[in-house]
Amino acid sequence: MGLIPLIALSVGATLGTGIFVVLGEAAPLAGPAVVISFAIAALAALFSALSYAELASAVPVSGSAYSYTYATLGEIIAWVCGWCLLLEYGVSVAAVAVGWGSYLNEFLGSTIGWRIPEALSAAPSEGGIIDLPAAVVVLIATAVLLEGVRESARVTTITTLIKISVLIFFVVVAVTAFNSDNLQPFAPAGVAGIGAAASMVFFSFIGFDAASTAGEEAKNPQRDLPRAIIISLGIVTLVYVLVALTAVAAVGVDDVSSSGASLATVLEQVIGRGWPATILAAGAVIAIASVVLTVLYGQTRILVAMSRDGLMPKVLSKVGAKRVPTVNTLVVGGVVAVLSALVPLGELVNATNIGTLLSFALVNIGVLVLRRTKPDLPRTFRTLVPLVPVLGVAMCVWLLAHLPGVTWLAFALWSAVGLVVYFTYGRRRSALNKPAQTEPQPALDS
Image (tube, rainbow, N blue to C red; front, side):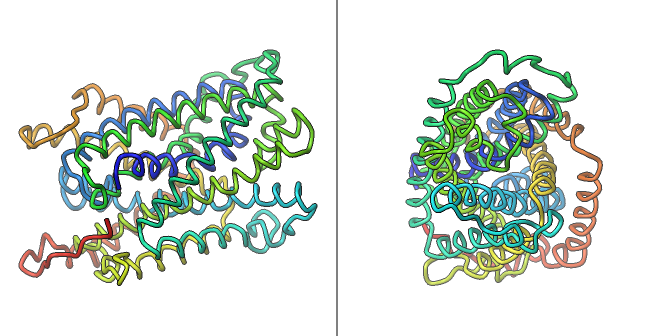
């Protein structure tokens, strides 16, 4: 993959459920100041993106933050980071898939007047039996990934262009109903509300690091990975701020928060139920499906890296006839499909954020360590050290502090399971502890 496909991969993994659905979840927390929450989350992502860019230029391999941490902080910290990434990617795919179902129902309702019954489109805790659309979109993405990375990259590039066009269309329509009165009071819950919303909408920026998981499939990783990460984050931030501002100003916070398909609801409020809302819903169906594809891709590549290091079963890094980690992809797709079918969106979003923020903090620390331990290592991109990594860690910690206690409890249990797996399986089979038994691994499709 060259620069454009890498940017498409990164934007494709980021631009999706975060703005199409999570805006409606976060707006009640901060009021119109949710726009500031997006800006704060973007700033936190920027510091980490700059650190990612430096490490991607110095350590251009698959595995994202896990591989960077392994190279800078050692195996056990890398395991913790990798375990966090498994939570981030796996749970975020499930969250994205759940959001997809809301827009699918909106699209079906506006075109043929029929919606999937709640029993088959909602998690058990929300009154349904199973979220069938969420599981189906994960299985479709799994099937596409099994066809190879070239095919996946083409699909991602096309769908990324579609979703950007749809969001620009939304902004153009919503700005015609711009009413500054809807922005008052601007921050009814004060700094606490802005912080809580920022912690939630940080979910919207997860995925910009997806390009860094493609280190082995990039034509020129040292040059293109840093550029792809930074350019994609800039594109996503601009789109998010414009969409959030025009949505809230057009209809007010209450109407933005009234539906799982929040942006389609805004258009219905502005111009009535008709073709614009249908186009938005159709675009969201395509856009969110592409996020499922790209984030699922990132999850499989992290497992490949962990498997090669001996911390996960070797079968997860074996590639098939199409140079794709077939067993890995099937296992990840199956587990995520079940998760998305049974767990509601809000719980998935917060669980994703905590894993992501901790892994981002470790990446920032990794930049500081690598600058000190290997100052002469070739780097095609250098961030401002120590300022940027220190601010990156500080922003991650600040956002973590605003996550609810139940999320921390769930994460503590996840971490405990991870440590048990490491000390009972990974540590004894680690490639570091058995250097003589390691063998060259086949490269992934490029």
